[in-house]
Length: 201
View 1 (cartoon, helix red, strand yellow):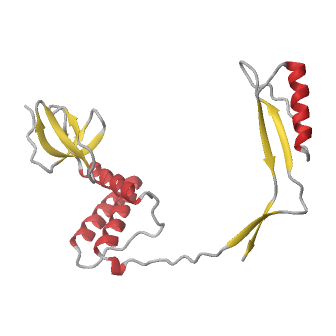
View 2 (cartoon, helix red, strand yellow):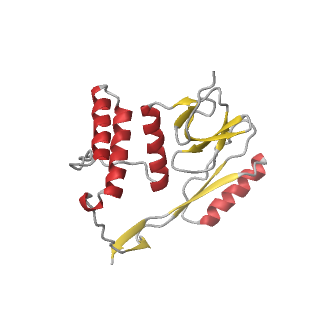
View 3 (cartoon, one colour):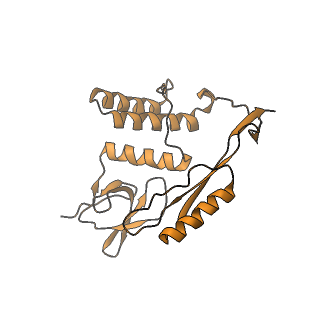
């Protein structure tokens, strides 16, 4: 028997290995929307099932990371705000994960708790201020730049012959010409190396 779902239920689609929000049926298909919004996709109603709390949590974390563009969390775990039910729920989930030694789920709970606090309790979120310090960059005058080329021709493997570092690019080009005359190799990789210094303005 195909399980019936209410609109808004979070379900897991084993075929795509994704968690989505059940939106209803379109012909023979179940329509699912990605957690956090996005383009719906079709799933087999006979194969989808209710998502577990862990699967929902992971999907919410991925959606939050996608929105922020940064999946890196701070080292210090967030502290729940007293009297907030959402904070308490996420903190309890974190403690349950910690008791089960599930580091991945614990990190996911921290990320969601931090996101929730930034939206619901912005006055309690500690903000860091970064100061821009301008610098100027210039080439080190006492160190001459170096030029080099090496042969990358070859059917099964690169030739690997190298010109060695030269102070004059014309010397590297001359080495390439001679190598091509001797071997008929015609593909080279070239590099330019200099030394840069940054000076605070």
